[in-house]
Image (spheres, rainbow over the protein chains, first blue to last red):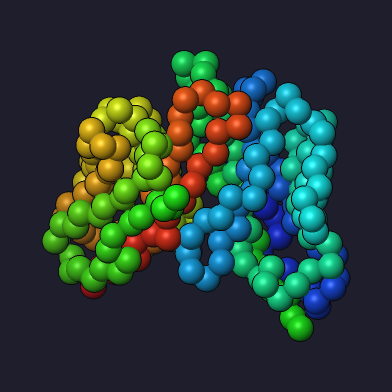
Length: 120
Length: 115
């Protein structure tokens, strides 16, 4: 079963538009961790944010904001006033609590990614 | 501080050969994980190493193996290559001291093409 679903395969917007990338996850653990990564054409996955399951505070960082809702198992990502440099593939990922109960990450389950293209 | 370094960046092999990929984690990071990325399957977890021990393994055949050295550097090996092994192989490292804010840092990957 897919643990992380990113229903949007591709999104195209024009510069300065706001865009929201959806992420829905599935886990039976009560402690888990959610991530967003950005993958530009160079291939490297760039860390954007980590959110812990016990911390439902939404977060804003510059033009980026994240909406975490446990009730709907969603962790959506919004880019405000998009720019051409935001064009990339964005991945949502889930890490469940390590079997030994520590806060180590173990493996990440990634969604299939959303290709965002921002046109000038 | 240098990031995660993977070598080589590109590799071309033929079916039946074997290949070894290398990963140097960020200095001080103790955990190294490997992921395979393909257009068809997306990003899939291969294995995770910590203190030279494999701690976690994904659903890949035994042809895929890895190891970690005492300096935390890691290698992964794929024997008897198949066409389907063509992929971007990504390495990630983390501190793994049980930090509240633990995160994975990824390298740029090794693009393997099997002909």
